[in-house]
Length: 335
Ligand code: 2P0
Image (cartoon, rainbow, N blue to C red):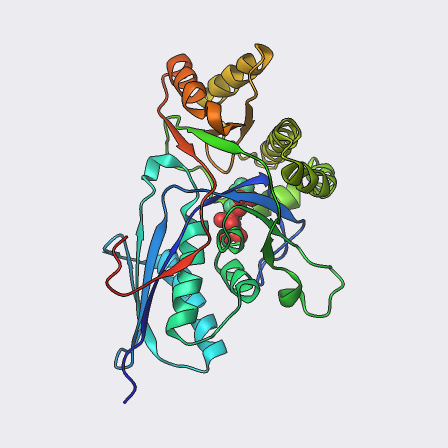
């Protein structure tokens, strides 16, 4: 009998500077356009996959609680994909710990599926290189493809005419980035998420008259953002990131029915960022599928700018810098 195989992996969340919003293929999770992101150094997800040859079904524990419903189904589907590639029918126990406070609004699905992809690929013996791992993580959640890598990352949509769509869409690091930026997350009060990002994306794509224009602008933004990252040109990075994110929110808010993640508190924080910029500060806002505002700024000035944002808005802040690639944790390593 082969001994049960186990692996534990750690991955960090990422924040897109050019956003992923809309799929060309819902099953394979192929985006309509490329996106570019920064992996963060805060709130890693740690995921263990342990093969259980005697078990009839998977067990999924999220922060020590058994997963149910759609959450369980989504992870089981992902493990089925790994098993089909490994030629295995062995069930697993999957346990994940998120360190993201629920209120932080830093997408946990990117870190979670990147860690799960790495741990499951290792436990089932798939032997994937990083590119293949990013493609596997993509199948769990699109943005997870980017959390496979540290630093700045480019997720390629792939050619829509490619014979093998799955192989064509992968993430890879942006080499030789000289940008020295930090990200200040301004945590506004948080109610329940009005719509999941998956559904919001679908509805926007189908019904927003603003979507085609945003998509075309995003395709133009990608090479401009890449060049600015490599050149360390924070002003251009900030300008593109802000217009791309605000444009994305415009597409959601013009969907039918509209999807509104920006609250009055978000607008209050945005107004403060614009005020700071008018007074000469190098700060630019970005937002994801939630009410929090993330502020890109020069790394050496992050503490002062975060304090000023806290004082002006009354909201807690969190400073993040570039984080590492997903990695396997050795047995007995509690770091
Ligand atoms: C991003 N977001 O680029 C964009 C910007 C949110 C706003 O990727 O359906 O959870 O699992 O592929 O990855 C959130 O979408 O969606 C996301 P699925 P995912 O970061």
